[in-house]
View 1 (cartoon, one colour):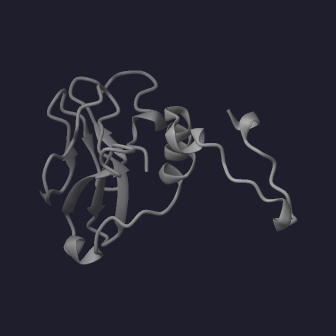
View 2 (view 1 turned 120 degrees about the vertical axis):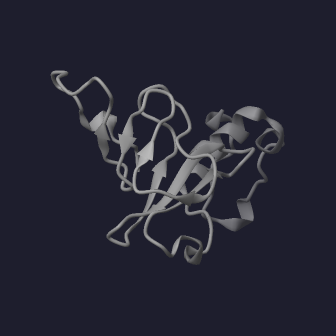
Length: 140
């Protein structure tokens, strides 16, 4: 795909336009979505929406385009966090609507997370060896 693009010349007199496939080919669209939009800053909301500690605000990053379920939280230390809104166990959404909470709890198997994304506990796994691990925390 990238090998079909014309080389970039420092001399503007030798400029060329991009092939039409760049604007119409789904592979180029996916490449732009993953390498440009998913990795760049995007406006989400005004932080006034998350003024109080314990505030939760779920949102979808670039809905219909990237479709990444994320969650903004403000913890008891008044720190703002952006986390994955997907449980690290079975992929269940953690928060479906704006609200307030002291911890995040997955309704599927009861995993609990701090508002900064740290894994706290899971019922009946208190004696499991090597559990929890870093992979059990919510991605930030």
